[in-house]
Length: 504
Image (tube, rainbow, N blue to C red; front, side, top):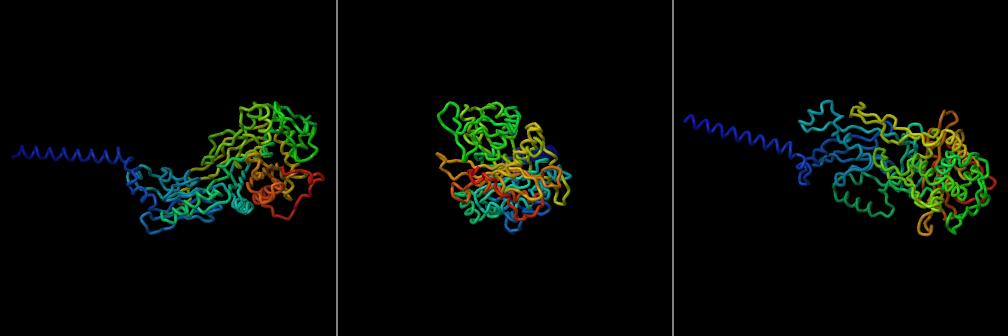
């Protein structure tokens, strides 16, 4: 009898070992496949079982969580949702996450190991830490000024602090309320369908995910290349530029919107945005130096993230001379995001040094303890300091007596460049109005803000659309908000020949 008991005990022990091995296989080896199985709702239930961390602008959260009492318990809420949607994105129980909600999902959802002082214990218990918070670099006043200035028109604004790369404003309009997508009801599905079929594309982040022909604002890059390469030595020396200018190897003649551009100096050509001068300058500089300068500013960079990905701005490096001439005035295949053009202005303002832009200042635990700080991003010298100094002089002239007088701010030095980019078949589309700028208050040691504004559908007749008229006032309001200067109703009077100039 004892022998049978021993055999039975051994068999039971073997079954127990097999059971433990199988449990270990299921929990350790195959757990990932079970977690990813669409039929398994446990991860979703666990994900929404606690409030999500918040995204902060300054010290104030612009997100929240509400207890629905349902199986997927906590649902995302947004404060001033349309204002901050290009930054926060959405966190949806049906459609996932975008932008900061996606890039910082580990912190916000509580699954980032950095949130727990005992991450191994959390792995054993499979219990997430409370969601952490994400503190952004945004300036609340600048963000509001940009949004109000666009008035719901299609367009975008990006603003950067030149010395650090901190993004101060990131606005895209028309916008949407991400709270409409938070839940899992029929109303959520209906909102998703409506937003995706809206011809105005409210969910498109035009500030970082849409590229435009930059038009005459790209002349900042062309001027930098001309000065750095020694093609132009004196800002006031005639440039030997015919008007009209025949594009090399073609019979096409490039013209200007007004008179006075023939042989114009770089200073005059920049102030009045002479196409012929800059097209010829681009050809004289050559494709190699033009490409190197553009790429120094960030064009053709496919790796830029802030921390969510930014669509690459492009400068075609395989062009003939005629194409190079058009590329050098921001046409042909040259395309840029508003963030990229803000980077161009920031490099000019920062003595030719460019900091990579970033949007997250730090991440914290629920109680406010910092777990990760941004630190300064890498810096690169994209042009000589002397070139940046002369470009600031040229951009200041545009605002003082050129096409950008609507951006002038009492109590500050402002530099800018207007642009009107043509698009559509045969340039039949309504032109894009551009303005890029930087500003330094009289009592500040260095420029504090660089801005780029694009307006797709400027509310004016085609012939009246201009970067100076439509985009510059928006940039002015954003710069004033950052500098802390009040609007005193000041408008710089027009120069004596300004009425003859076109919309550049």
